Length: 231
Ligand SMILES: [Zn+2]
Image (tube, rainbow, N blue to C red; front, side, top):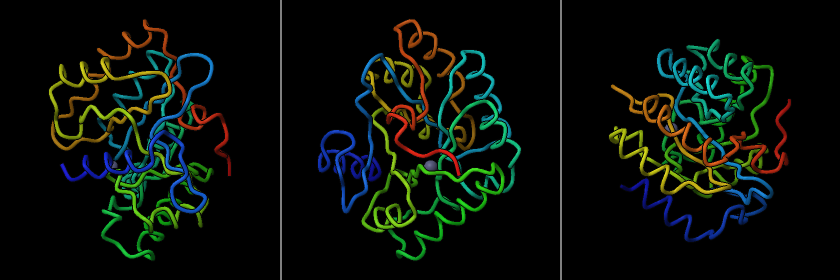
């Protein structure tokens, strides 16, 4: 609940997507998609040997590219899965090293969490990530300052079907199909502890969104390619 309130408060504070937060950093909840009906699927907390594999298969089946916000410790354990994501055309973002609540950490710790994950991701993909999603969407001044200093764009989301809370598949499907509009950034997880509802929900959601004419792009593409993706 606290997470939702924080994100909601931040959304109200910042207003529309892409509004500048503190300093020069921008925090994106969604993005005016311009021409066409574009949306970005994002997957947090992986990689995971079961769910990431399954989700990659589903995305391949539908010819969809997405953005994975990877946790450093998981990338350290399963680097081949991160390389598999990249090889399939997906984008890799930084989700910190140990998924800490950055609102409770000092600036130095926040910076270290981002840099440690960056080092692992750069080692395993030969590319430096430029997108940052703070765990739980818990944005604060330290995150904004570190993002500015380390050259990251902060990405939150506009549609959260709460798969992380083991929401029933039917409810996830209804939430996404009711609330998704062009320019939205959708939050999913390729790791949920215990039984994940995400793969089954995706199997039901994706064909409907395709039928509705949506094009699935990476977050950087949704932002208009303004975010540098190479090292
Ligand atoms: Zn997370």
